Length: 144
Image 1: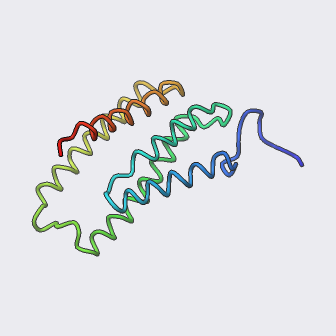
Image 2: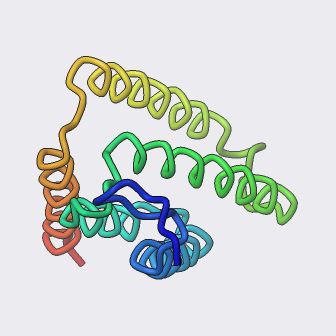
Image 3: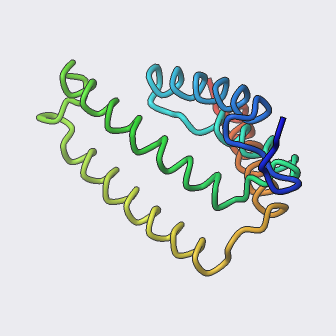
């Protein structure tokens, strides 16, 4: 069997990539559909891939994959929520505007930092783990 891959790389359909990606995407989609929060399973996936440099999945590849997944799933969830009347636009429109503007500022800030300080694989994994740890501490420390 002829393998046309450069040494140390994998095909996107390699089972070491596909299976963990499917598990993370399933968990992320489930959490997104249930709570509207999709991030943690994807961060776990990125940290996992970052620990396997032989897969050659660079932070840039992972970032573009996440952007694509989030864009498509967010559009689907928005349309579904709108059709089900779950956005409460007539009552909570000031809140929605605040969230969209704040998210837009956060996105521009994150993109600026990404352009100014491109992530190397080690830092990328450290940031994923730090964000997961921060989320865990936040939820454990929440009262009630």
